[in-house]
Each structure stands twice: as C-alpha cells, then as structure tokens.
Length: 626
Image (cartoon, rainbow, N blue to C red; front, side):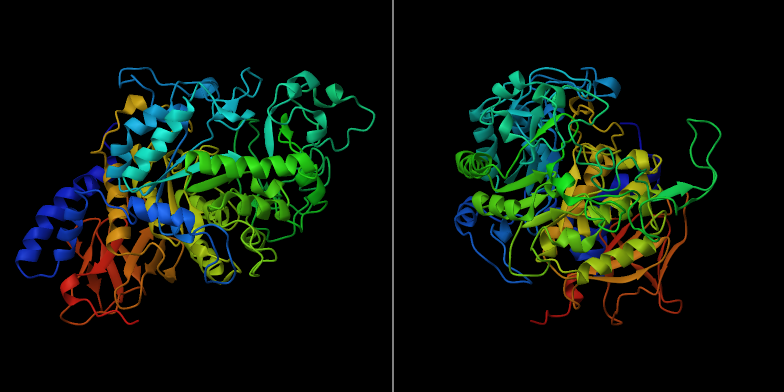
C-alpha cells in the first residue's frame, strides 16, 4: 500500500512510537500520562474477554437477561465484542503470496478466486494482533456450481445443499479446525447463513438437485397464475417473473411500476452518465412522504405509497429460490438444520442474511432453534421497525432476534463522514449525533447487540466513498469502533482497500500499516477501558464535529471525531470539555499526547483532523460510583 498522505504526515503512522516513547517520558516526569504507556504495553499481547471454558459455558447458558425485553441467545457471546468480517473466497488462499495477481475486481467480482477456510485459520495471528474478539465468515455450505449473468456462488449465498461444505471453500473438518483454533485463542466464530432463499432456479430440474428442498412446492410462486413453473422461473435477468421482493418491479416497497426513489436532482447533468449538478430534493411525484429518512423506499417504510408486506415476504431476490416457510416441511427442516449446524460446528454467533424478507414469527423460531445469538441484516432507516427485529412488538417481552446490524446509523454515518448523499446526512455530523440519540431512546431490547459498520461486501468501500481522504476514513473508523454496539470491520478496510471484493493476499497482511495500528489501538481502548457494554452519551454535534462518551461519568472515555479531512488544521471542539480538576491530566490515546483544553473558550483544541480518544490518566481518576 502506498504511504497514506494524511495519516502518515499527521502522525498516525507513528502512533506506536508516540504512545510508547513519548508516554514513557511524560509518565516518568510525573505528568500523568502513564495510561498511554499502559495501553502501548497492552497492545503487545493478545487480549480477550473470555477463556475457552467461559465460551463453553456461555454456549450452554441459554436464557433471558435484563433489559426492555427477553432474548434467547447468550448476550455475552457477542455484546461487547469486536468483529473482523471476511469473505472466505477473498481473504486468504493457501499458497498465495504478494506476487500473485489480484482477483475479484471489475467483471471478476462475482467469480471464484480460491480463498479457503484453511487460509483464514492460517491468518488468525494477523486478526488477533489487531485486537479482535470474533471472526465473521461468509457461508461455506455447498453452492450452485454453474454461472449465471449475475456470476457464481463464490460469496456463499447461493445454497444448493445445506448439509455439505463446498469443496471450493474446504471440508467439514476445515471448518471445525477454524472454530477450534478460534476457541483456543479465546475468540469466537460468527457464521453467516441464509434463511430466506436458496440458489438460482430456472427450471424444475434445478430444484430436484437441491438438498433438502427438492420440490417446487417448497418455493414461493406469488403471481404465477397460469404459467408453468418453468415459465415462471426461466428468466436470468429483467425480472419479474418471478415476483420480486425489492422496490417496485412487483409492488413490494412501492406501487408496481413506480419509481421508488424519494428524492430527485434539482439540476441533473445533460450528460447521461453525469451526476447531479444541483441539490437532491424531495420528489413530490414519488411514493415517499416529505422528510423521508430513506433515499428510496426500503423495508419498513410503510408510509411509501403501495408498500406491500406480503410481496416483500414472498417475492424473490432476482432468480434466487425464495423459500416458502408456510410449508410445514420447509419450516421444520430449516429449524432442525440450524439447530444441527450450530451444534455440529460449535458456532458461537450467527449472522442472518436478508432478515426483513421473512416473517417475525418465523425469525423468532429460528432464534429459538439456534440457541446462540443471531444478528439480522435489516436494511432500513426506520428505527421502530428495526427494533421490532429484537422484540415484536418493539420493546415487549416477545423476543425475535438477539441482535441486528445497525443499518439506520450506517447510512447516516457514511454520508456524514464522507460527504456522499443521503437524506439530511451529507457532511452533517449533527444529524448523526441526532440519530445516535434517537437510537438510545428507541424501543430496542438490547443496544449492545447492534452491529456497527462503515462498509461491507455489498457496498462501496469507505475509502472510495470518502474520496481517498484517509483522515475522514480514520474518523469513521473511530466512530465505528467506539459507538455503542458491536463494531464490525470489513477485511481490508485496515489497508484502505477500494475494491469491494478484492482478494487480500497480494497485500501481504501487513501489521505495520496506519490503519492496522489505528484499529489495534481502538480495540485496546475498548478492552482496557472496559467500554464494550458501557453507557454512551452524545455530548455535542455540529455539521463538522461530534463528541460522545463511553463509560461511567467519573472515568468515561471521550471520543472526538470530525469530517474535516486531510487539509484541516487548528480543529476546535467547542462546548465539549471534560470536567477536570486542576491536578488531573487527560491524554489522547491516538497521538499519545496530553489533551489540549482552552477553558476560556470552552474548547478542546487539535492541530489536525485526527480523531481524539481521551481518558483521564489513571493516577488522577475518580473512584467509580456503583
């Protein structure tokens, strides 16, 4: 990776040197910076919250816990942990090295590259050295073997046999070896699975090859009418049929045939490939109410004209066979399979793909069958709808899933830090602060099991969206790692990758990059300060600055982030000064320097736009109040 202009020039490239050498000198001089020295020492050794015996006990200790509602899985298996997310086909290929050509770019994005389960096992040192507690892997069960215009099953979401491991990924023993290796390191496995659909289907013969759902009656066939099954599913593009679960092709999130976009450009470029030269404004001709938080009609946007829950649940994703959970065999078999798989491979946590396209009652049954926490992928901006995936109705004692990926904040955070367009969010950290506060008071069962992220395998990399501005990326990572919930980092983000599904082996798993050191430091702060499940408070937010705290009032961690970028200097966070006694010292754990506070202005001052993570030096800390 080329040197990163912003981070290297401004000091992050030397973070370990600063935190070690400078902090030792300050500590020795009695200037109250010994905590930074301790964190530097902490970074030199593996850390985890639970030992192997603890993990084993956690998996046996299934039951309810306190909060606004009850859950089924074990809270401590994921709450407070940090997660590193890898796509199996792209992260590590046995025998590969830095001279191998890259794979997975452009037209090859959806084709096999050769990454395997064994490769991940061989790189656990790299992941653990960054400080992560868990590894999330994409599905590895037997995939559709062919190729469609959409690509191949290389990402793992096109299942054809639920009981086999795909040989492209490895063997059943390889998966067991990976899980055992993680548990031996006191780490956990997050396994991705799909309950909504199987792989591509274009005729009845393809269905007959599927295991265990080898009959057409096991798949939804909404609006089939007089078509034969083969006629209903024959298309490999330009759907429907089959009926589609997204947008308006079949009338799922808005009226069929309508443009589901909530906003339109006030002055679009004459160039058909050009962008918006004016402002994005609400479209009164569209299906959305004025002031919509969504860019387009999404799951849970019930106010969108024509929104139809039945089509959302029973429609297909493109040509992927949508399972009919109202069929008793399908429902029971899915529940039995999930229970078997978790026990067979000793899974700690599950991530569930496309959760809002299944009914709440079925999701609740999936969670009960799993016996371990499930984090659902719920692509929505509606927080009440989002919270409903933890309890139905929201805030009740009727559990659904233990956790949910935090899409409502993802959409706003990416836009706020990077400047991409999303309603009310573009370069607007004030709106992100507002949304964080709204989530704190929303009817969630458990905020500590919301999965926070800034990029993933289905969307542009944060480095691309932020226009290659390393300091905007650094601030977005500090927010992701320290806001309330479960931080999830997508593989390669630490190396500032730009291709969404790039192979990783050609980058050499370098542990000295700026991004690696930043995430390593942030993980250390999470553990050292024990903020994994601690309270959060938003202190101040304006368009360019956001300050929030984690932990109890006496000894909280103060997080200062901005969206000003590499050219910023003399950064001021005003109206957000930690209360301090005259004899106490605050230290920034990113730079290793004492925090600069102008009490006359009421501002925390910085020379650049690096994020600040400030804590009281341990010698001057106030005793915690129970």
